[in-house]
Image (cartoon, rainbow, N blue to C red; front, side, top):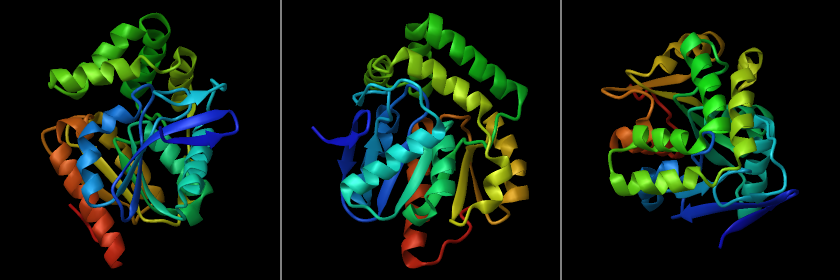
Length: 261
């Protein structure tokens, strides 16, 4: 089984295909299985899907992680796989890890892609979502896992697979990830980003209100809006999402990153 050694355990990851490396970062608890519908991207690129520490099939002694800790795990994974630079894509609060990676490892970054991401929790709804997630992860993890899986796909087989994988997450880690995300902020550091930066949102996602925060600090950021979907873009509108990722990476390879709206 493919594992990357860490100081406090070993990280499990999937690897598909060859070409430009694309590393995809999941939100709390969901693990790599949330990117089930992105596996076809391995036909075009070197797709790498890790389970971060405390999640899925990764085995770690450590249970408390910051976004910077997870960014260091991705750097260790790149070293393990002999990858100098990669496109790093984060979904939801997985985008916190992506932003930390780009800020701390710019020389290891080809581009950053956030799907439903945010530079800090800047709305009441998002704050409530985090607080509710913390409560549910602590007291009703099975119910939360079912809710997450159901929200992401109508496919019963994929839904069961996600549910089982979510419940592999360490419950302390799960709670703490929501807590860390609730208090995460990189607003004051965003101006330091020196790599191509892409933001993907569902048209119905209240997180797209964070666009104005990004545009003030990263005016060159490319904004991509996918219609008829809320937050769960990678699963609910995976064809459009995969197409946009393909266009982004192809543009980087050709040296002509352009607006994708």
